[in-house]
Image (cartoon, rainbow, N blue to C red; front, top):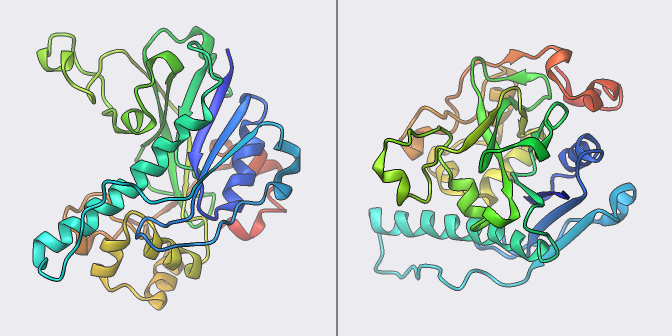
Length: 296
């Protein structure tokens, strides 16, 4: 069994270096997808440079997207209000999904019983105590710590269900796996027979890794929110760079996962708590001096 670790890339060299070092001994190939367009639809220059990651270059499959998705919504001058808003959001989702699904092009040599991990680059699974060859369930979902700004500042009493995995033969598409619901449904539920999202055959991995979200400066976080899927929420929130700096200083999550209104999601998160070294990856603890800027 070969293990493929697959994710999208924007400019996250720090997190990418951490990811590659943590997973190197468990992973056979890293599939990295970068697009010449951000999720807002703006053209951008490519940032990935394999020379920065020479140690891993024989494992890296780097894919570039040259064109936007073919099925974007046309936004006209006559579109306004909720209709215009809906199209902006839908197009951002389509761009993200298109980039994630492009991962499949890096799996052409994968065999049916190779294991495929799908994550965002900052969602790093813990494979230390997991033998993937012994997994009997169809889908594996990792319960992950969620940290902000620093490696050791986390949301309290919260698990992030980020990384998901399955055998290549069961992979309908990378976005399909991403969309699988993070709960195990009873066999007695008739709807699971027809659902693309609801499954019973799931293995949950407790202490299954880390979602190191926004391990960035305030300026980098601002750029991310302007460029990524959630750019519309950021624009509606009217959060300034000064506000972002204050949120980081106060050790609060910038994103409120419990709020439904888009214009109130950013800037109202929970107070963060410190994570002990025992709950962090060994690589990060061993390199704490090198990574000291990113510790609280």
